[in-house]
Image (cartoon, rainbow, N blue to C red; front, side):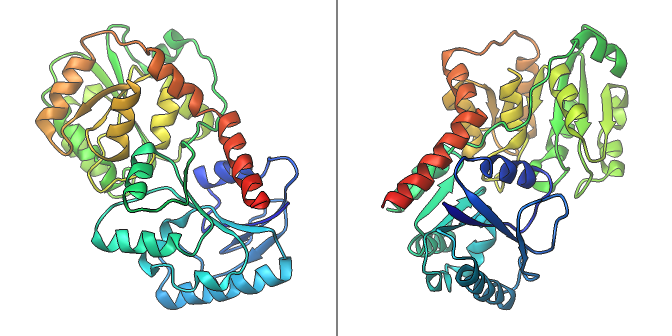
Length: 352
């Protein structure tokens, strides 16, 4: 089988995601990117207008160029690894690609215009892949049948650490509950909501803030934590895999204080599950649905500071252990199941 992959990015989780899929046996692959990447050893094609935020003209150029590459490369199918960039264009031009097209959608908001766009895009593709059951149910509710659910996986290698040594290294006392906020400090991830909520938490804790500063700056963080700076451990930069694993290992509770606009799967959630951590997240969208249905922790009223404060107080005052439901979900996010489901999807498409 020959597959032409397409992505607008090859860093971070994009890179890890693609590198796992390309390991599927019996596939000859090449990839289309906005620029050449020396870290990727297979054949590459460049479409400069390919971008998360491309204009309509840039999008039309991308579709036209992709169609040309399909005629040159002659793959069995095209797989667009991140379809979130397509929503603004309502599927225009996708029908000129005359071979099966699979698109993976990582984030899905639902509104009147978005729903129309989804229906039009799905009418031009063979299958769309979504990463949460919440999104699957909404797509089915729009009478979209060619949608497949493959849970967002944990793709890194889990490591075992001496937690007491890690606490000593980070200056954490044994009686302090360790909270973790992981990832870029984007506005939609709600770090500011968390920091306001923690200002009134009375129990002892340490909060690790780890990730590249973006919308919420280090200055913003310092201002919001001025009254409890002794409780904060900051690592505001790109976090490599080793340090990420240390932070998740040493933490007791992973907090996802995301705003309503965040409507997709969460990498930190899957990592937290791999490490058996209690998760706190909003009561809406995919995050809330995943936490509640799989017994992974607690939910708070989305964007409500007082609700988050109360849930944190509750979470750090009691013990929590994964039950059968949580353990089943933990198995479902494995690399093996992820690769098997994609392999089955490819094979089914070829048989059809």
